[in-house]
Length: 312
Image (cartoon, rainbow, N blue to C red):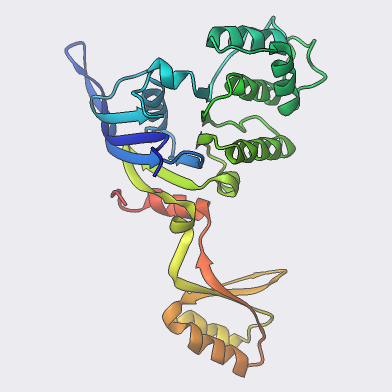
């Protein structure tokens, strides 16, 4: 079994509490999770949950008060790990008087990573993030979306094994967001690990393999997306019509009913699904689909952060 790309083991971080600052804030409280090599891990939580603190610890910008963190097998801040990480913070700024090629060349030199053909590398990255044609435009003239694309190009400069991205689709239009998601999937197919924080949960659900949810500095849930969205004791039944008497009986058995252009969907406990299907058939309804019920990532997230704050 390969070593996880990211490991948090019982990590805690406290701000303040010293003689000059008596207010004590527990930003992280005994947090443990892993992100496997070659997967997209979604790191989720409401504002103030501890995501920024966790990313700062992961990158070596801050130090934990207790616990252990490993990044690509090394301690955070270790040069051997930093050389293999591409980082895009939520809020960043570039020199406005530079053009994209000049800025990327500057960052490539800062990285210390050798490049046989830096102009070709920079040109390929500019094309990959859809900034081709703007090579002579100063960054000060960029839109927010163009800045975000340039930030992604910067994160990819050194051919990282691990990408740490905080709100990477911020400021992009729907087409631009799709392009970024497609790019992340392509990077995953190359074996790279993506650690992604975002508030746009339907998009995250399209690409992530693993989900970590924190709130108020505590880990609430962690696991694969498939495990977390599966509702093992619920069944989804889609029918072409639903007589009122059957609908009433279904609701009495705890079913939820939704209607859309593709049919009528009933979600019911597995213990009642045979009985309900027989009632539907007897009433002349055609069962179009029968599947294990699944939640959405957004519904799961809202349910998790609204529920009891326990580690799961």
